[in-house]
Length: 323
Image (cartoon, rainbow, N blue to C red; front, top):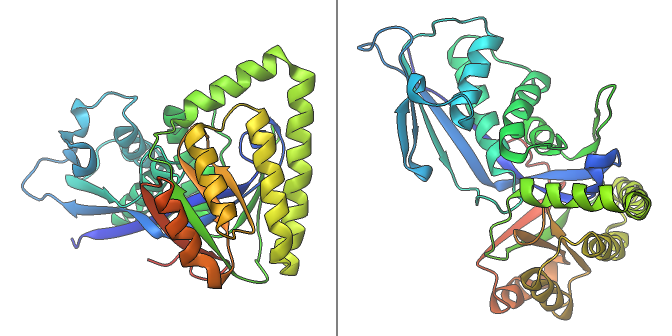
């Protein structure tokens, strides 16, 4: 049986993080310049049911039976076997690699899950649709983030720009077309940003001041709706002020950091049209909207301001889903 490989892109949230947990819309887009990859190979010399997981990026090599239920890689494999009704899968090895920075708001955990689900289900003879891939990855996201919004697994599974609303009666998921592609510079602050911590802190703040936080979340929701309209009309210049406003509201939620503020100031001084943190905050990434002419200038300014990594991506270029 030949080896099967699948990959999944990273992601950034353009607008709406944190508020999306409370029923407001958010917009996220894939970042195809970084990817997670899973390769599944048969192990004919091993007895049936022998499943080995290799993840050199975290120094893991173990048999599935040895791993705890809460281990994310073990969890995703077990979810796929349950989905396909396999009590004893054939002997196989799952090897995972990734170029997506961890704890940086780029969806590394969801991308690894999606890559494993796709490679493993195809190896076992049943390619799952994006909806099921996303649903299984969401179950693993709960291990990473506690109470995730569901946006990471959604945008990564569909590999297209997504307008997402979390609802009790079923999430609203709409892929949509960006009328005019535009570049975004993603700058890594160098500070790890575990999403579960910031999501939990915002929840406690909301519980302490529900009226104030509901107003913040509602205002973010209005920004997201305006941003989608601008994206669909190709009015890129309108996005900059909306990003700035969204970032100000995230600051009011308490999820910025000195490192992110330093990067934001550097980006704006270098000519960015707008900038904001992306993801959980308190670290992770800053994203800056730029013109094609100023992309390298802004990237260099961010490096000089302390960014430990730079990714330049084009939103709406049609490259989503490749690889």
